[in-house]
Amino acid sequence: MKRWSKISSVFAILTIILVLYFVSSSGIYHSRDVAFAQNSSLTIISLSSDNKLISGGQFVISPNPFTGTGNYTIKDNSPDDTAKDKNGVIILSGITNGNYSIIQTNITPGYSVDQIQKLVQVNNSSGVVTFTDLPANNATISSSPTRSVTYTTKFECGSIFAGEGPLRPGHYDTDISLFNKQRFQIQALWNSVPTNGPSSNAILLKMDSETSKSITCQDIRATLGNNNENFIEGFTIINVPLDSTFGSGITMTSPSSNNINILDVQAFYTANALDILPHEVIIDKISFYIIQDGSGKIPANMMQKTLDISIPSGLNQISDTEKKVKDVLAKQYTLSDDDLSKIVIRIKDVSVGVGVLIDDHAISLSTVKPELDS
Image (tube, rainbow, N blue to C red):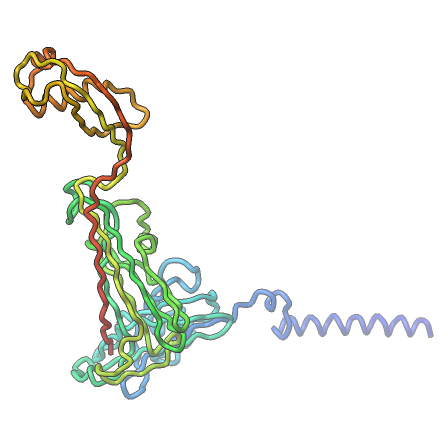
């Protein structure tokens, strides 16, 4: 009996081992795969205006959905497209979770590229975006629903110290203010386009109902990787998509719609156009007498009376007060060194104050009008 019990136990153990082997081999159970599987995917669909699938689409995704950095280009039915049997549908599997901007760069001949950037969020699920491509000879774009609203603003940031810039020497600053006056969250995409330079990557901007945000020179420099104080200028482009995953759900069918202006956008500019930037300076106010003038060049009515002069002074610097006064007299009355040696002055008093150079400060405010993209 005991022997039979041992044989039964061994048989049961062998049976369990065999079952686990076949289950793991068949892919029904694999603890390592379950722990590290990446189920996120991204689907890109190309449609005609009558909702038919169009093949040949090519797209640039930012950032790269597999690495999280740089850009990634995918074409319909290319090796990474797991939906090769379906023209007009691209599926990327096993991608990294995140927010992505997608633009279409090519489509099958006979159709025009959809030029509206799409935004999609992927978070342990499947993100889907759709591009609508009109016939190349279609001239009725204005009658199609509006798919985004764009605000384009000028920016000027940094300092110009001499004649190296397009503007007068001074300091220039830009603050672009945005107000979401809608009763729902708005999500927009903005990027910087510097003069004579490449455009920056797009930045996702989320705004809750009745809230405001700003884009400053510091933000613009960050998008361009420019962290110095050199002068830069260009444009910012703020795009509010209406028909993508990040869209607000609004559909506008004509430019006269009352809801065309999704956001209130205003650009605030400040400029100081001085040859020298304004700053505080120390001022010495010197009271003195002219006791004797052997040069005969100083007017007689200035002799033996209290005179005042204000001169910029350096901090913690030792200076000759009498020489400062004589230098001013020499400039005003065209005195030579020999003339100055014949003039005797006495310093009565010196007082120190702080002055500020005149600030030629300009401020302007511009309301940015929206543009419709169909």
